[in-house]
Amino acid sequence: MSVGERPLPDETLERSLGLEAFGTDEDGVARGRMAVSDRVKQPFGIVHGGAYASLAESVTSRATYEEVGPGSGAFGQSNHTTFLRPVSAGTIDAVAHARHRGRTSWVWDVEMTDEQGRLCAISRLIIAVRPLEGVDGSGSRP
Amino acid sequence: MSVGERPLPDETLERSLGLEAFGTDEDGVARGRMAVSDRVKQPFGIVHGGAYASLAESVTSRATYEEVGPGSGAFGQSNHTTFLRPVSAGTIDAVAHARHRGRTSWVWDVEMTDEQGRLCAISRLIIAVRPLEGVDGSGSRP
Amino acid sequence: MSVGERPLPDETLERSLGLEAFGTDEDGVARGRMAVSDRVKQPFGIVHGGAYASLAESVTSRATYEEVGPGSGAFGQSNHTTFLRPVSAGTIDAVAHARHRGRTSWVWDVEMTDEQGRLCAISRLIIAVRPLEGVDGSGSRP
Amino acid sequence: MSVGERPLPDETLERSLGLEAFGTDEDGVARGRMAVSDRVKQPFGIVHGGAYASLAESVTSRATYEEVGPGSGAFGQSNHTTFLRPVSAGTIDAVAHARHRGRTSWVWDVEMTDEQGRLCAISRLIIAVRPLEGVDGSGSRP
Image (cartoon, rainbow over all chains, first blue to last red; front, side):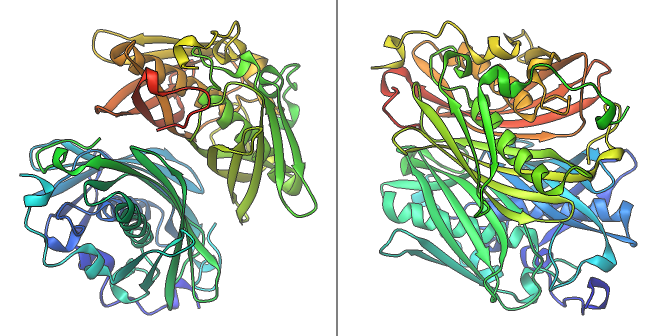
């Protein structure tokens, strides 16, 4: 069963966590946002590291797919997120720049800031670009 | 306001995504699990990269805290997750080994496998260990 | 000018630093070694972080190329090295395991130990596999 | 034996590879440079991935040490270098920005470009800051 034939999920991680990936604006910058609700926190009340990683992954996967799809898919290959400052309220804004736009992979840098504009987390991602027919649930990543 | 004084969240990312971090067993291995429901998927129906990163972060943060807490906290500093195989059903099991147990940081390797035991994602994390009184919402990470 | 037509270097980084990459043995493990001479140290007298990264890169690039070459090349795409213990004498042994052998990229884990067998550094690498005719000095990485 | 008492090396990796780390200029940017001689190349004639990692490590370690030393040392903890474009001639310039200057660790981003100003490699590093008396050759990293 290919990705195209797989039933699309009713829920998604984006909806579970309240993430939004806005796509790429005219100057080539991709953006996203996450409200700091309890559902993105770890048990001590600060934003969970996985929430930043998720936000960065959604923003860059969507932005890559907007350019390479629908013939090809955009699949995260590597997500390295570094945490700089704990946040416990407000919103997190993500701004992503493509550092490399290759035929088979894109490299992205993402900066995430709190409502005061302070840098909270940064991510570097490799998004693999693959023809969509070659990827399915039983298959292997690039 | 210190972490200790901050109101604990009613919800958490762990609950939003259905992650479980089981702590460390007798032989020093930390484990966790995630059911592959729609709420951990990206829009094309496979597990979202951020879900793997979240699972790895929860398992290793909890396992570190179990040893250094409650006097000190365990805070993710770096989470590098590499995705090897798409998964669209079943469960994901995480197994984590500490590669370094320092006074101020621990280094962990996490392997995540599907129900057939196939490797789906691997993570390397640095978890910072800090006295709890020094970290608060307005402060900075290590 | 393609890689095949480029004049091969008389010296190499491997020779400058005294690195050896031994290739893959029968059980699929790739190995390498580095003597801890002054030429791999940083100014304070311990092994330079770049020396570990170099050793890991040489071992995994060579091992990947042994399998995919000579029709395809093996090119480092990402090298994430974590330093666990300073070393100032002896030798460093590297042992590398492929965690993924894809059509267009391989993922490797490398462990580097000192003469007492203590873990000093660990690396995770993505090695891109590309047809050799498509890569040249003026061209772009994958 | 502490770092201070260890005999300083006659040679260094910086000299073996021809790397220069210039320190931090007035606007807080750290810089370095590497000539693309054969001694920094891999066997196929392009710059070895470890050379970029070494350059990034030297530039950021030195720049951190300039601010925290001599009472404290600056030790690489994590070096993640991503390779974007092969280079076979000219020089490589490195420009590094500190993204976080913590009490116990600094986070740096490094961009490396060729003579035409094209981005060839990018690195993200965590440099640990530690009191110098606590680190010696038999001891453990942070």
